[in-house]
Amino acid sequence: MAQIGWGQAPGDAGLVMREALRSGSINNYGSWSSPRYDAAIDDAASETDATKRNALLAAASRLAADDVALIITHYQVNVWAGKNGLKIVPRMDERTLAMSVTPE
View 1 (tube, rainbow, N blue to C red):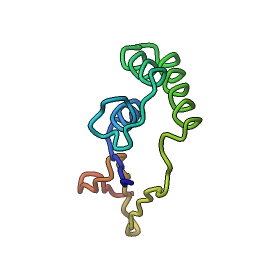
View 2: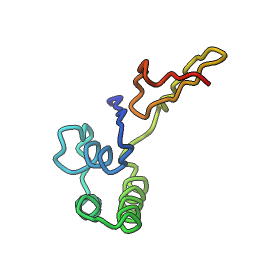
View 3: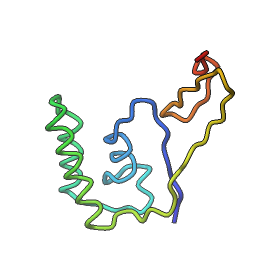
View 4: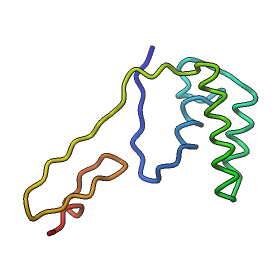
């Protein structure tokens, strides 16, 4: 059992899916393997059409879910506090930077 997670700026599901579940990935701690999943992830990595790429990632996600490749036990929730008159823009990479705080 391992607790893993990623915070990443681009918000690319393919990155996490490739690193966490692709056969042979150093981060595939459960050693789960599926040639169909690997093919979908590989095809998505080279697909330039966003609609087709999203469909490939969705298909890979369904394969992993149907096979119970991961058992999700934790969902990360981030909380930011603010002050009246200031606006904080949360970042996808979970960092809090001074430049993310602006006057309202």
